[in-house]
Amino acid sequence: MTLHIKVSPSLLAADFAHLADSIAAVEEAGADEIHFDVMDGSFVPNITVGLPVLEAIRPLTKLPIDIHMMVLEPGRYAREFAAAGGDIFTMHIEACDDLEASLGDARVAGMTAGVSLKPDTPASALQSTIPLIERVLVMTVEPGFGGQSFMPEMLPKITEIQDMARIADHQIEIAVDGGIKVDTAGEVIEAGATTLISGTGVFNYPDGMKIGIEAIRTAGN
Ligand code: DX5
Ligand code: ZN
Image (cartoon, rainbow, N blue to C red; front, side):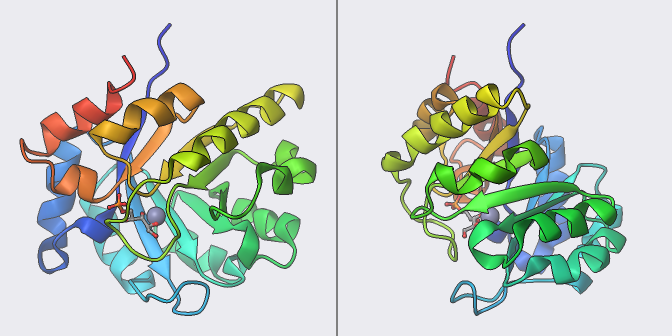
């Protein structure tokens, strides 16, 4: 059986004046999820969107929405993001004082709990919590901005997390985010990533998003 590689377009690269059209277009183009970047201006230097925008887009798609919380102490907001329609709640390990408690907040709110690692954070930071985690997001750029270049030095981290999960006999979905495009997708898939988040790589694909999504998904073949 071949593994299904999921492609999750990041709305950060969409046209914010026509979000509904962008969402309809990525769904039609075969996206598996929608990636929704929340930035607080403290954990990262940028500020993006939050609850009212999530509420507005939720009725527009049946796809799962992954909330990428680039926010300090994200667990504080788990209940509100779940109520607004979030399905996956991805929190940065660097932003949580008590990661286990934050994972609990996401789960109690009814969402899949994900943990994200900035480029400088090693895989070993997850060692004690791996059995509690359903999904890991390996950042392949410094979080905060779209359109940056992929960091190939993150590839061994993906494989290391795969190995840690195997040793713990625990299944983990590994997502990657930052600089993922057709020309970088193959190597992250080979390293063990199964969910590919892509902003500019999908929205700016020259031959259109449908061909772009399929090209990213099959880049490892
Ligand atoms: C960056 C965000 C990403 C961003 C990726 O901090 O987390 O989701 O949209 O953009 P690309 O795919 O253009 O690098
Ligand atoms: Zn993101």
